[in-house]
View 1 (cartoon, rainbow, N blue to C red):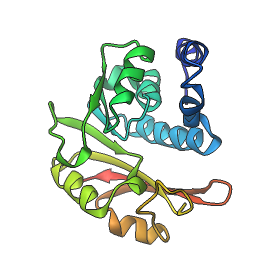
View 2: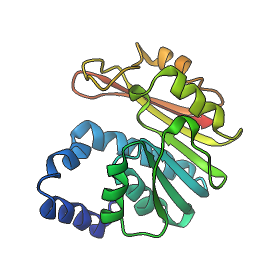
View 3: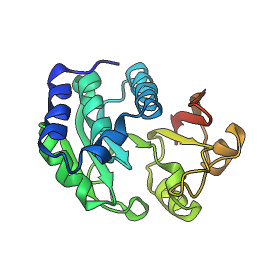
Length: 197
């Protein structure tokens, strides 16, 4: 995974000039978070979908920025979608690219402004089954998807973890699977599946 030096500079500037937000912002850089983003980028670089990327649960835009740093030639736009309106403010302050659009919206009824080349959901444990099902149904057939989740029930924000990898694939309706991976994250397991809907 490549990280542009200007990207690191922009992250550090945000932390330096927004000390009141720095702790929450730095949550994106826990070891398990960094490894999960690295695994995602490796999959995207291997498959290189061309067009519009959609990151659901985009948080403060680190994933969107890493997509640009590693796949800029393949990317028409990156839509970073999150229900928290504060995320859009942070992304607009940190990510300096016309290719990234911060969107405040619930994923379950999100309408794609342009045909997606790839949809990414790294917050599957944070949403109900009903929300996931509605989100999944709206993905156009044939679109590449990447799903990440875990079995970390201890977090109060996690409401739909998987019991194991088979359970993860079942509750996420995974089909036409191109690849799958699981890894240990210091006491819990992270799962990732990618394929075409």
